[in-house]
Amino acid sequence: MGFELSLTSFVKAQKKLYDEGIDNVRLVMVDGRFGLRELFRDSSVRKVFVNFPCPWSKKGHENRRVTAGDFVQSLASVLEMDGEFELATDDRKYALEVHELLSQGGFFDVKPVEINPDRKIKTRYERKWIEEGRTIHLVKARKIKDTSVQRLTWEESAVHVKIENLNEGKMPSLKGKVYKGRNDRVFVVKEVFKDFDGESYYMKLISSDKGFDQHYNLILERKRDFWVLKIDNTCQPYRTPAVKWSLYKIKEELSI
Ligand SMILES: C[S@@+](CC[C@H](N)C(=O)[O-])C[C@H]1O[C@@H](n2cnc3c(N)ncnc32)[C@H](O)[C@@H]1O
Image (cartoon, rainbow, N blue to C red):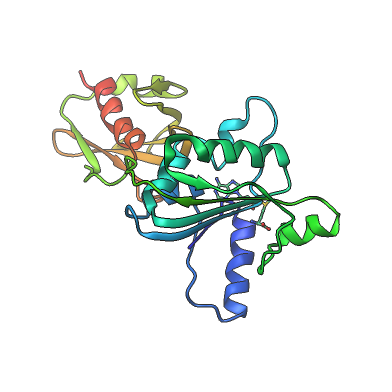
C-alpha cells in the first residue's frame, strides 16, 4: 500500500503500476501519517518505507514532516514484532533527527545511519540525487516493543444532528468563525450559502485534527418542524473528532 498526497504523482504511480501489470499494490491519496494510523490494525504490517520525504528544514515547519506528531507511536502500533522501518533521505540533519526520534520510548532497535546504501529498488529521487553526487542517508529500525495508538476514526459516528429551534438569523455570522476544541481539534466555517428556495443552507468547512486537514461541506435542511444538519455527500471527509464536533458545535451555535 502506498500513500501520496500529490494528485499528479499519484496518477503517475497508478499509470506505472498499470503499465507494468503490477496488481498487488493499492495507492491511497491521503496523508501518510493519517493512513498509517487509521488504515491498519495493530501488529499487521511487515515493513514501512518512507522514501525521500520533504525534510521541512525551515524553523517552525517541523510539524509538517511525515515523521511528526504521533508517527513513531503509530509505526510501533501497526508494525508486527520485528517488523522493519526504513527512511531514506539526502538530508543528513533530518536523518539524525529521525534516528533520535525512533530511539525514544524503547519501541525500536535503531541501526546506525547507513551512508549511500545499495538499495535494490531505487526511487526517482534516489536516482536523481545519486546522479547529482549527493549523499544518501538510510535510517533503519526494527520493532522490539508493542504499543497501541489511539485511532481517530474507528468509533461509530452519527452523520447528522437534529435542530429543533433554529436561530436562522445567526446563519450569516458563522462565516469566518474559527472554533478551537480539545486535543488540537479546530474547524473554520469558510462560507455560508443559502439555497434559492430557502429550504436549505450550505457551509464550506475546513477542519484539522492535530494538523490533519480536511475540506468538506455541511448541509442544513428544513424538515416539517425542525432542521437537519449533516455532512453533504459531495465529499466524504473521514469522520474525525473535529469533523464530528463541527456538527455538534454548529448545532449549539444555531439553537435557540
Ligand atoms: C521528494 S518527493 C519523493 C518522491 C518519491 N518517494 C521518491 O523517492 O522518488 C516527496 C513526496 O512526498 C509526498 N508527500 C509529502 N508529504 C506527504 C505526506 N504527509 N503523506 C504522503 N505523501 C507525502 C509529496 O507529495 C512528494 O511527492
